[in-house]
Amino acid sequence: MTHESYLSAWQQSQELAESMQPLIGKLYRNQGVETCVYARPLLNASTIDILKAHRVVRRHEGQPLPVSQSYPVLKALSEMELAPASIDLGKLAVRYWKEHQDESGLAEFLKAELAPALNSNADAKPTDVVLYGFGRIGRLLARLLIERAGSNNGMRLRGIVVRGSGDDLEKRASLLRRDSVHGPFNGSIEVDAENNAIIANGTYIQVIYANSPEEIDYTQYGIHDALVVDNTGKWRDEAGLGLHLKAKGAAKVLLTAPGKGDIKNIVFGVNDHMIDAEDRIMSAASCTTNAITPVLKAVSDTYGVKNGHVETVHSYTNDQNLIDNYHKGDRRGRSAALNMVLTSTGAASAVAKALPELKGKLTGNAIRVPTPNVSMAVLNLNLEKATTAEELNDYLLQVSLDSPLHNQIDFSTSSELVSTDMVGSRFAGIVDSLATIVDGDRAVLYVWYDNEFGYSCQVVRVMQKMAGIELMDLPARG
Figure 1 (cartoon, rainbow, N blue to C red):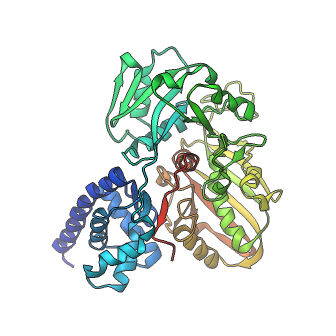
Figure 2: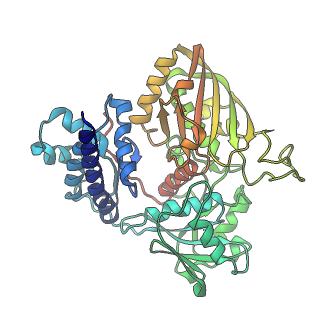
């Protein structure tokens, strides 16, 4: 190909990707349909992100998916009456064009593949959501909820609760608007100082100042039967989290940290079947537990796990000191920005709450390192069945595409991958396949994870389940 032909081909793909953006948005806003390409979400994606998602298909199919093949599929989707669902545009396009030469059979193909989402009228009232605490996770949850706002979205962000007297509204809004790790907010943010509210991309968010959960009356703000997401970590048992349920207008509570006692710790994709409609207090476990449990489940299901050790290389958190100072925890008083800090993690033992078959089989430790985000878990496992690195990687690649864990496990084949490449990943964990080591029945797996954003995506999935939202995952796995 000549220089001009390369450029022309790129511009044609770019124009098609640009044409896809309004169709993607309309499908979500009007019908509650979320589209993706091989698990890469397309909602609010840039033109370049859409093109990059199409290139990921090469990892599974041997060649990238041409936008010229996915665009007609998306256009046909936009003309259908569909129930809220998660639809993988990439899988539909690959399946269709393997068997067809033109678009003449596309309508019938889509009717067959998407039959469960046809002629279904979902008109449920959306669930009000309140974020109690507005730190790192709270603000990322706000971003995720705002980007999903639409007439058919089953959850709507109605309020955030923070401590204080009400004189810091501009600063709260500024922290939502700008983020040193995750970049600027994608849209417009205004402040209604008179009514203590933030308006983000048209979403009106009441800012409520309170020092304890039970003193709040959410109903005075028009908030009813709310799902309260506690991001503070101050209360982790049923008695403490139960204070939220004493607030007028609150119905359920989700903790974004490991829960204590009999509270169910949910890792979405692994044990979300444990969520019952009558459950009022739940935990979304920890970022590390969410990162490692799906991979451990996949390995355990096929190869079995005798025992193992989990070593977490974790970015520093707000719990540590910026410079040396007193801290009640061992070593955590030393400067987070200057030191690797050996500390403990409960993630290995917490896995058993989501995956009981691994109870007592894992040990764990953690090293906090001087990076602000993205962590890695090293899984050193003794398997019940011998295998090879190639076989194990092939299996995990398939799991990442075509299994109930395809939204939790991502898979990389890059030899140049470093931590900042995972900032913004929506997966719970990313298997670094080139680092996999296998010697008979001993395996070492390296799993990256965005301990802020990837975890927040998992929290949103738990929130949806608690709100009674279960999107159909289409097309059916092949």
